[in-house]
Length: 612
Image (cartoon, rainbow, N blue to C red; front, side, top):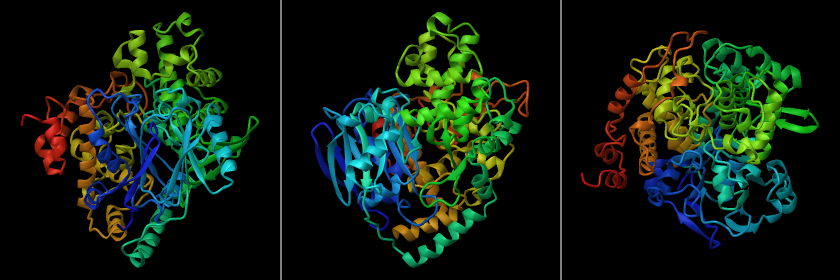
C-alpha cells in the first residue's frame, strides 16, 4: 500500500499481548487515516452505555498518508477514544516530531485496550514493540518524563507522548503531551491513558512508506511549500505567533470576555506583540513546518523554557477571566503543559467559577476562598488545585456541565456543547461557527468547524463552494457549515495542519500521487462526510440525540457592546436547514438509514435503524 505501512500495532495492556492489526485497502480508500480511520476501527468495539474508563474502551493513536512525507505541515497525529469529559466520541490532534517518529517506527498507528497492573510505557522501534515498566515515571511531570525516557534509552532522537499527574489522576480533561509543549489537548484522552496505567508511548525508527508517484510528488510538494510560504498569513504567524489574533479578534467581537458576557477589553496587553516584547519570545515549529506559529519563552520565572501560550490559551486564562496579567497567563499555560491539562477546558471552568461566585451561586464557604475576576495568582493556584483534585479544584476539574449540576446552577449558563467547553471564538461573531459548535462530532470545537477562517477570507475552497459569507447572519449557513465540517475531517484524516493554506485540488492531487488511488475534491468531501457520520453514529450509540445539538444561552444571547452588539445566531433556523442538508432524522438526531447506506456505513445503518 503506497503511503501506508498497512498495519497498526494492537496492544492489550491487561494481558500484555502485542500483535499486528492488518489494514484493508478498501477501508483506507474510504476513511484515509487519522481520526476517521480510528473511528472505523473503533466502531464495533463501542457499545451503548460503555464507560470511557473501562479497560475494554479503545485508545487509538493514528497517523495518515501525509504523515512522514515531505508535504509541509503534516507532522500530525490523532488520538481518539470515548471522551472521559463528555462520554461520547472524543479525539484530539497534536504536532511536533512525535507523529513522524510514530510513522517511522513502522506502524500507521496503535490500537490499545486493557489496563496494565502497574504503570507502563510502550516502546516502538523499526517494526518492533514492547511494553516496559514505568513505575519510576509515575507522578512526574511531562517535561521530566520526556527527558528521563530519552536518557534511559540513550537516544536523543526518540520522541515521547506522555501524560502528567493530571492524566494519572484521571482529571476528565487531562491531555497528552509530546515534544515538550505540544498537546493533544481536548476531550480528556490523557485521563483515558491514565486509566490504562499507560504513562507514555515512545517512538523511534527510520522506516518509510513508498509513494505511488515519487517524481510527481516532488513537484507537488515544492508547489505546496511555495503556497504556504507565499500566503499573507505566513510572515504574520512567523513574527507574532497565533497570539497575533488577539487584537483583531477583539475588534471583530470574536474573543469572549468575562465568561462570554463581554467582548471589549484591552487586547493589546496580552497580544502577540506584548508577548514578544515582554519576554523576547522566539518562534518554534512542528517538524517540517515553514510557518513556525508557536512561541517559546526562555528563562521565565526560573523555568528554562516555556512553550506558548497560544491564542486559545491566552484568551481562556486572560479576557475570559478578566485577567490581563500576562505573567500569570504564561505561568498557567506552563503548568497545564507540565501537568498535562487542557488549557481551554481549564480556563472556561475557572471563568465559570468566577461567574458563579459573582452571582452568589458558588459561595466562599463552598470554594474555600474568594474567587474574584481578574486575579492572575488565583488562576495559577486553581490550575494546581485542579491537577491535584484538591478542594474546589476537584469540582472545577469535572468541567462546566458537572459544575452546573453539582451547584444546581442554570444549565443555560454552562458554556459547553455535549460536555466540551466552548473554545475562544465567539459564536455571535461568526454565526456559522455557532452551528458548527452545536453539531460538531466531539462537541464545541473551532477546529472541526473553523467557519471563522473562511468568513474572514483567510481560506476559501471554491472547488467545494466554500467562500466568505456575511458573518453576522444565520440565513443560508447550513450547507456551507456542513461542507466546512467535512473539509476539516479530511485534514484530520490525512493528517494535515488546519493552518495549511493548500487548495482542495492540491490536496487531492497529492493524496492521489501518494496512494495511487484517484481522489478529486468531491471525493474528499465525501470522505469527510463519511467521517462525520460514523462519529455521529458512535455518539448516537452512546446516547446523543437532537436535543444535544444546541448552544447554551450565555454564549449566544446578544451583547450590548462591541461589533456584535445586538446580534444573536438563529439556532432553530440553522439547525433545521442543517438536518435537512445532512439527511439526519429530526426526531432522533441520527443520520438517516439512506444516508448511512449511501456512505457505505451499512453496519451503522443496521445498528441505528434495526427495524427499518
